[in-house]
Structure formats: C-alpha cells, structure tokens
Image (cartoon, rainbow, N blue to C red; front, side, top):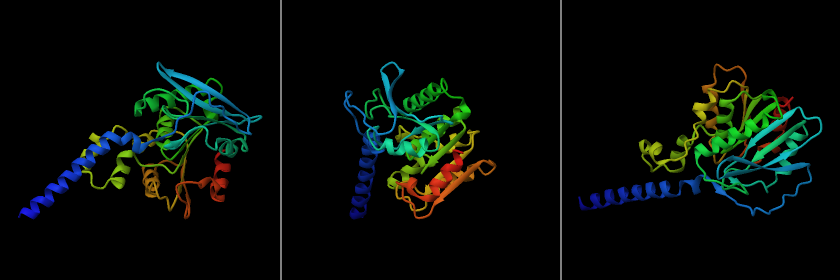
Length: 270
C-alpha cells in the first residue's frame, strides 16, 4: 500500500511540475524568437524594400516587401515559429515573384527588429493591420494570404475577417489546443484550454473563410501531423473551392522543393 501511495504521489508531483513548466515557459516552447539589431542591414539579390509599421502604441512591426515588374497581385505571408526576416527570404520570394506576385512578409513582435509585447491578440491585430495596409495598394481580389506552420493559424484568422483572392496553408495545425496533447500527453486534457495562453483556433476560423482554400501537407510531417490537414478539409466538405495537396513522404520543411508543390502553386497563382 505504501509503495502504491508513493507511486501515486510521484505521478501527481510529475504532473504538477509539468503543468507549472508549461504554464511558465509556454511562449518559449511555442516560439523560437530570433532578434536582430535595429541597425541590421538586410541584403538580398532580389529587389526589396524594408518597412516599419506602427500597429499600435509601443508596437512596431518590421516587414519586407519583395517587388516584381507588372505584378498580378501580392502574397501576404505569415512565417513559422522561428527565425526572422534575415533568413532566406530572397530565395523564398522567387516562388512568388517568378509567378508575377509580389511578397510581403512580417516579423512577429519580438522577432527580428519587430517590437512590442507578444500575445495571440497582438499577433492577430498586427496581421489584420498588415492586410489593411496592403489594401491601400491592392484590391482584395489581388491579395493572396499564405501561412506556413505556425503562421497557418494566423493566415486563417486574417482570411476569415477579410475577402482575399485565396488562402494558402502549408503544414497547418487543427489548433494549438489540439496539438498540445501530442507534445505533452501527460497533461489532463480538461486543463489544456485553461493553461494555454495561445489557442490559434484554425478549426474555428477556417469555416468562416469565403475565399478558395488550398492546403499543402507532407504525409510524413514529423512536427504537425498530416491528419491535421485531413481533419481541416473535412470541416470544408461543403466547400467546392477547397483542396488538399498531399506531398507523399514530405516532411515538415522544404515542401516547396517538391515538383507537386511547384505545379500546384503555379495553378493557384494563375
């Protein structure tokens, strides 16, 4: 009996410690922030402009705007959980500029040169602000909203509040609430919504999107399960202009190097 009580006590302590750790460090677990000095000078071979947008008092968002001649529209891109605008954005921009689309990509608060206090509400506010900023230069039917990994929830939120040309999601998650039990199976499920400060309910937002939706996902994704996309697609069963482009044996990263991705993106941006 004593051994059983000791075992139960140890399990209980383990769960309590796990809960405390996740509540305290969840932002560090969800985001891999990489800052840049404000004087950092971006250098890309591709034509670009650096922008700073004051989204609200105390928050300044750094963005890059990659240009092309005679553009058909612009892609508003929300990146994943790590890195910043100093990464290979020149090369990524070619995926869109080569198809006659310009590219606008922002760093979230605390990433790169962007400043301000980070929260789910703040991220969604800044994302909306960037969309509204682009409508000063483009019609909504010329704006493609694109999200990758963590950015898919943000992109879906934006598309659900506006009327873009299309929504493109690369390796999306059903929600952060859904993803957490896979990463921390020891947590009681009923506690997860109470513990997490970030929910990013892609599943709730996606059903409110009127624009066409195209989803890319690798079948061997090691970070965001492939079934996240199949489940999202099931929510869109009555939507004719929704598709899932499955990349066989594709992992979480580098989907853009697959011929199937390239062919599908060309059709989407046609």
